[in-house]
Length: 190
Image 1 (tube, rainbow, N blue to C red):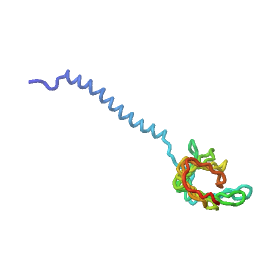
Image 2 (image 1 turned 45 degrees about the vertical axis):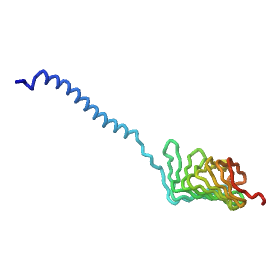
Image 3 (image 1 turned 45 degrees about the horizontal axis):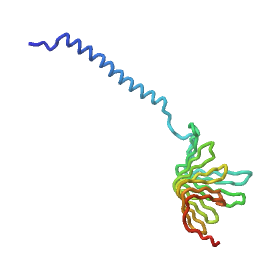
């Protein structure tokens, strides 16, 4: 009869399983430590401040220059590249030096600190008191130069007609308009 518990085989099995067991133990231990290290370097991306039913009036020398209204504002001034987000959209009324108004609305907006650029997105509309209306999916506003621009498709409506195009930039009062790839019908008789 053969002896199943041969001492020589038992020693070699033990010699093999001991390092294997230590290796498995170390892997499990390192996995746990790795997850802890990941948690140390993890920072939550949460706003520094939040405002509901936000209504801001910007004045200069006692005159109202613009009014910004939004259902929600999130301030991320605590991140490496600070920004302010308006996840539920904005409505802005801008006034020129003669009190004429320009109206801006979008379903989403974000502005990055230090750039003076506002990124308006989704269902962007800008109009004025002379019945001019521009509609697009994305529009940037350079606050410092009071200039709008986009490379997206747009629809521009005014009393003379309707035009469509892709790429446009213009002053906030529509007095200067530079458009690219444009088509449509405009009545130049007036």
